[in-house]
Length: 113
Length: 237
Image: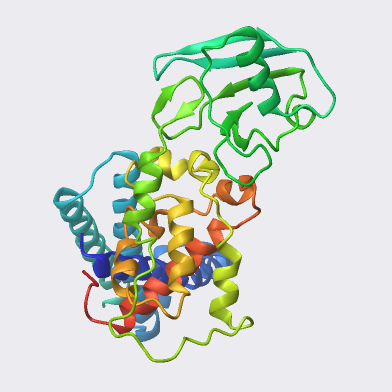
């Protein structure tokens, strides 16, 4: 086990948790604000399409969630399933990559023209 | 009073004894009464009887405690006692737990003082009010009874986890400015077996008979390992 790598993963988990706390608050506040005038795809796309700020915000959200989720699932796999070592590392990496791809794809879908 | 006592090894069972209640009776008094008057084959461990040695810890009505400093009044609300060896450790016989893995983990956490490479001419001056000295003071009174280790759920899940006492010991040494083995120590207490597996459940801190806070020490190790990883490229091994 590489001690430095373990510590860096732990720091990544904590730092992304702090980012996610802010992102989730903004996300929920936006939902509460947005549904007041009735919810429709056109209304959502009207707000997000071509908007640089929302694109940046959701990119940060997706990347933080991918890192946080992947590292967290690795810890859960170790504690609950006894899954450690190379298999757990690969599973963590795949989960992280899939989250990044699907998340960024969704961002492109709501921001792109 | 009905007292259930664990007999045998891991595949053992509880045996019931009828023990007379006395004023200011401790759980250790109860166990000693059983051995002297009811069954001389009962095995248990104790030495000082006054909370100095840390050898008489057992599971009393579900929680690990020093039996010598635990009054029956305080723990036997229903008038019954259930006494077992410390949890999370192999059972030798009856109330005696095998403490080897507990102390081996102190060594694995680099719980020994490591002298610096070159002896200096002068003594290191450690101010009593310095932050490091106060952090070390807060954890240094541990007498290694194993109560925190038996109370820790993470130890139960993960047999490699070093446990609260070993990590607390490592933290006192991280704050020893004379110590020359910090990189290896910080590496030893990192990751799955080390401080990063602690879930801050605080059972160790709640039950420590010395009122220490291993949870606080483990949080200190998390900060120290993070600081080291961010300022050094090597992995300490």
